[in-house]
Image 1 (cartoon, each protein chain N blue to C red):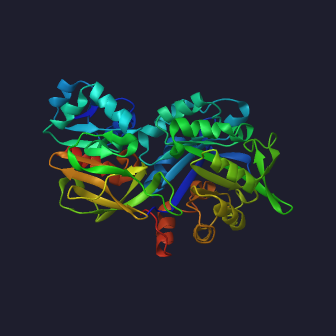
Image 2: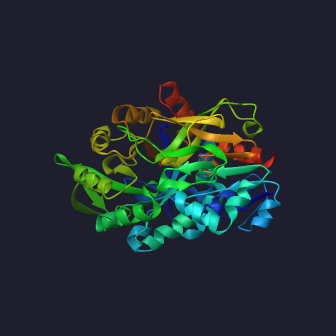
Image 3: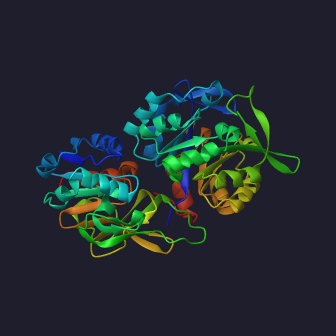
Length: 197
Length: 255
């Protein structure tokens, strides 16, 4: 069973459909007590960083998520929330991973958002989140802001001159920048791997 | 780096997938979900569901199948046809479509592109354009879903594309009408001209018949994606085999 954090405005039904496809039970809630007692937690997110964090704080979900000791998986804006700060709206995030989310640098012929299928190279193929993945996989991205590469980077991706974290893992906190629910078999695989942690 | 995309288009009429030659004589090709799943299994990068009658008859796309598609599909998909208001777009995107594509409504009121981009983000807004060469320029056509209502507009293609981009479109699908359904290859000249003036992704449409046509359009027109319909529906080209061929010829594609 996976508990999805209902922070408001997130793409919860597409995540629910994806989990349904791989036969994983899920429920969604904004109740901090319920989330605190969960075996696994997913943190989805779409929209702007500042708005999303304000909603998290208003619902007292920020402290709740930070204190979780179970496996946590952030998706898209949800993984950016795990970081310290985002340039988007100059927003303070949850501060679990000590790095800052930045906007893609403008470059000739580079369109922002970064949208489409891109290849991800894995830093630690032995990590259980990457079980039964090929050495390199393609995932579907749609984003304008990115988390830099660091010790916490499990999968790295490149868009023009910007290298960024496509998958992160630090202790029990994990997540991906791409949309696993739209990333074909590889996307389903990472969701399935998380459900077994 | 981003891969070149293979896009399968499913023209939907009355809840089934159809395809005609040069937009005429539509024949039934199969069930929406069945074809969507087949292409997903073959490795398609994106699907477009286009209700070819909706724009003309003033009705919204059938929402029931959008949700059914969202439930089974694990690759991105776009819904086109009959999206004329913010409410229409909201319904389709709330049903978890990744993008909406507008064509005739953008020609009627170009500000609609901007309004959509501001609310849903540029990544969700695709503008479809139908055009053909007349004398020595390309001219944009409207209401192409129904041959009895198709009209030639006063828009020069390249002027219209600049406007579409400036209004906030996130992507353009350019359908070269003279090539559509006849499988003699994409209109490289027209697509290359469009590529030159656009900074946003460009998807080629109309004319795919053989795997070489895909290689040519990526190499010579530098498009970001290539869309096809009947050549996939009939099984003449298998998407997985096509992508292997493109990779073997030096293109970066998702395998």
